[in-house]
Length: 134
Image 1: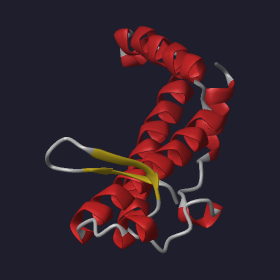
Image 2: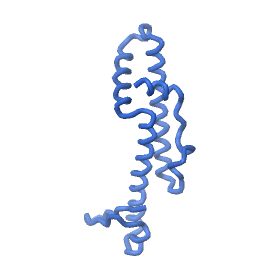
Image 3: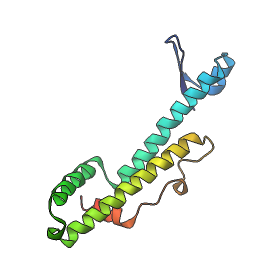
Image 4: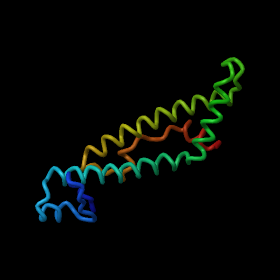
């Protein structure tokens, strides 16, 4: 893994590895901070790509707009489809919260394989259904 070391005096050591940084007598705490920063970036990209595989940025924006319109109606005047959209959106928010928790756990565990599907929460069917409408 390539890392970037940020020294307290503003200098940087770019495109290096933890091993090369250690050989250059870089303090271990700076190496550890750089490794954690890089892991946060790559795990974040994985998390984002998994969310966008279900609902793109545009789909999420359109869902938010639809939810605003539906939420402005009284509960008794919402159609069954609108109620299902609200329920699916609620499940989607819960899933995203679970994804964020998985992200944090995967960043904290350097041995965890963040590419493995089993490490991420399963997407609820109602989330897939609602996202598919947008």
